[in-house]
Length: 166
Figure (cartoon, rainbow, N blue to C red):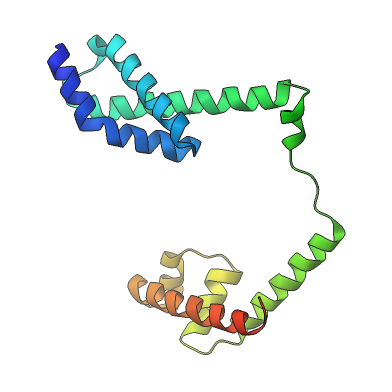
């Protein structure tokens, strides 16, 4: 691969690689660094790439760079006994658990107060956490119909819960 061809490759795939890194690490600055590292690694190993598989090859490099970063960040947080180690999660208090339980009960009551065609769809989706495809099969409805009913049910639930002070 010539330098000109590699420059074109960078131009073509820079946004894709940045997006992959950004989604994995969550920080735009780190994602930029990982994007540069991805292309550096690709440049150094460009002789190993089949021209037919450039895109998946670059994506795999980006994913691996992001994973390596996440692993090293985790290791720094765990291995240091300093301030970063204090950021680990703490157990919720009894008050928090009670508030969560009350909120869950309010949501369940709001779901069960819905009328058909929204009731069964909402129970299956919100309370039983079933996927849309399964709900569509169980209720013998098209998946798009189920999605529309869920959208409308969410709006109704939000309005009902907003009235209640949440």
